[in-house]
Structures are given as structure tokens and as C-alpha cells.
Image 1 (cartoon, one colour):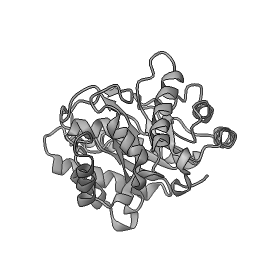
Image 2 (tube, rainbow, N blue to C red):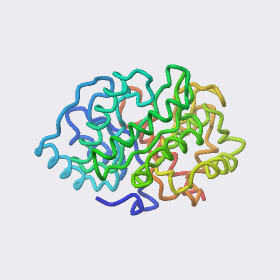
Image 3 (cartoon, rainbow, N blue to C red):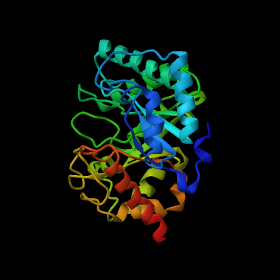
Length: 292
């Protein structure tokens, strides 16, 4: 498979697509969107069950990707995983689940796994950051090759990872020998909800990012508008241009040369149709670039 740096200017847009019926069905669903990059779940995200990937599935997935012409694929890990938990049993169960996710992705040839940094339910974010870094380290030591992308969160409740400094602290807590396998996913809805003003201070957001992390660590965008205002700390996605961010930040992202080759994945609402709304949002984003 091609690496992230091989993604062409016209081919870095995609969407989260369904794995219903098996992961081998996902690449075809990306192809139906004229997308060369895509995100999927390798398992049901709200269950602890950890399915094994057999050789037939590996072969079918690889063949489906070849037919679809996909260049880059990312998995999103289980919503149940909490590597920031103060509960030892939950932390260990989360680690096993995360290692299983990395293992499935390694077998399938999925290039990266997006993970939420988790919740410090004891109200101690520093301890949660340390626990998350330890979990990442253990998992990266166990499973080679697959990259991990820390997703910026909206800052709801006791979640960690709602600041670039949080993400930097987690990444820096991973030993140097493994740290290069840890990057960042910036979700535009989460960023705005967390207080990063992509509408009125677009450049200031990236100045803040570079004060915490090298820009090269930003390896994926989740492109989502927000149902709630700046700093609301609410994670509610909206279609592109249909929320409080409006079209402006997305137009700038699509024409910003710093991010031209960074994969950009939709997680916008799909309604009752898995294709038409994704097509609309992707068409809008492609149009922003063609206007430049």
C-alpha cells in the first residue's frame, strides 16, 4: 500500500465507511464515494468482543483495496477503551483491547489507528496522561509497524486530550524509540468545541499547535462542522457548512499548502443514506479547492 506521503493532492479526501458484512466491504464503499482514503471499524466499537482476523479476511480485504484503488486506510478504535482510567482492571482490559486492535490492523495492512486519549475519571489529568502514555508504549512494543494517531478531544467531562499540550505530553511520555509511530488526528468539531477558534483565529490555532508539537505530527484530519459554539466542550458533529464553523475554516483547510497531502476524513452525519450526504460533503470540499 502507498504511504501517507504518497497521497496525491486530489486523493486525500475520504470518509468513515461502514464495515457491515465484513471489513472487506469497506473499500468498495469508499470507492462509491470516489475516495482513495477511508476510515473503518475493524470490530463493533461498543462491544469488548475481539474478533480474530483469518487469512481469508486478510486476502479479501487486500483484494478489495486493490480493486478500489485506495491509498491509505485508518481504523478507529473501540469507544470502550480508556487508557487514562484510574481503575486497574479497566485499564488492563483497555490495553488488551487496544493491542487487539493494533494486531488486526497489522494483519490487514491498515496503516494507522485513531484513538481517543480517554477519561481521567478521578479528576487527575496528569495521572491520566501518564497512564495513557504507558498503555501506548506497551501496545507499540507488542505490535510492530502500525501507527497510532491521538485524536484531539472536545474536552467533555473528564476527558483528556482536549489541548495540543495534552497530546504532546502523551506523545512525549512514549519512549523515543517508539515515539515516531505516534501522530495526531485533529477533528475540526472537537477543536472548535475545545476552544480552538478555527473561524476567527485560524492561524492562531496552528501557531498553538506548533508551540506544542511539530506540524509533521499532524497526520489526519476529521472534517466535521459543529452543532455547538466555540468552547462548548460538546462533541456533536454537523455537515460541512451546516454548523457553527460554517464553510470558512474548511475552505481554508482545503487550500492550505501545509495540509495538502494530509488525509481528511468525514465523520459527518449520514442520515438514512450512507452515500448521498457523504457525496455532498465531499463535493463541497473538492469545490473549495477548485475555487482557489
